[in-house]
Image (cartoon, rainbow, N blue to C red; front, side):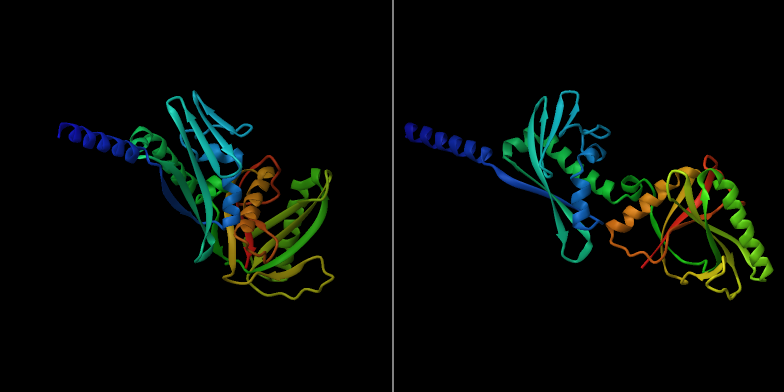
Length: 302
């Protein structure tokens, strides 16, 4: 009986060993408000891994590797990660899946294989991997982190404008933009259109020397203009959609706000309704490129 008892104990120990070391799959998922193809693009951008991967936040990804002290993260292809810590190793995979109910929503699925023993030995590794997925969700769901600005939606409230454009030397930007606004305000007064103080503007650099500027002043009365006139009456559909960011900084850096809106529009597949523009929030016009300004940058969309 003693021998039988030892055999039973041995079988229990062997069974326990295999049970504790049997590998099984663990998963964890989060949802993000971004179409699947764009989610893959941002997730697979190795230069951004340090924006969300724990414990490597704030580190730059160089040649497929992130390093923090003695810890190393290696990214294979676009979805397979292998973290080598000074106390062990933890490989895992993150995949991106479309949401069946919304074209603008995706799932990130974390998968790793583990054992019951490893769940205790590598618990911090697994916690970091899950926390990284939560961090990735916060990163992608934050326009401020993803695009550099808080992008929001608003409805059109300023609808009627006197509008004009002209091609200028970039060196004369402040002088020429001031002259264009002064001309439009004078036209609004001459036509008794009721200038209401709203000023919108846009510019495009044609080359290193020339720039085309577009200006509009808000009015309260409809006026008739002919196609050949330099000043045109234009309307923006009331209560239609705008993508908007607030910009405050040197005027010649406002292009960063336009870039953010363009990227946001492309990511969510919005369609342009008209050219983007910025609305002056402070009094005056004719600002120079290095002057600090406050603007509301808008992109009309369908």
